[in-house]
Length: 142
Image (spheres, rainbow, N blue to C red):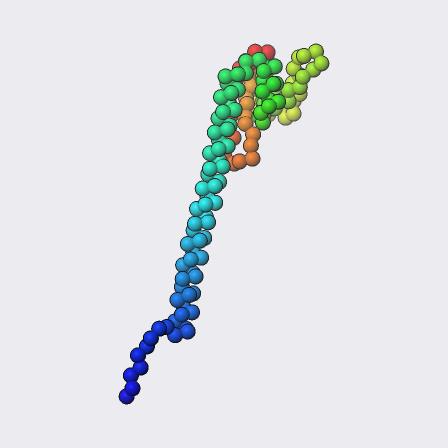
């Protein structure tokens, strides 16, 4: 009886080993791709939150009159809601006064103390990034 020594792989063994290596590689690539997508979305959200925090802090520090709020709204992407009135758009009249145009009325009932004469405004930051919207309430001299 002649004994044959096997040297190397057969064709079938080679194909099976390539198939196993490919499956493991594809699985690891999918896992790494998911990780990078999640990391990118998180970094984008953190950046948007930091920008919105800066905007809110600037409103609190720099805005004390309706005119300053108008000027601020021209350079920042914010939504202005007058408490007791609703969402407003501030426009500058020819005489230099600020006009409040109601764009969306407020559907909440408030006590008479909170009606528009008291200058309470809710400022909301806008943005396309989910979970990054911030808001604050400020009192402004009318």
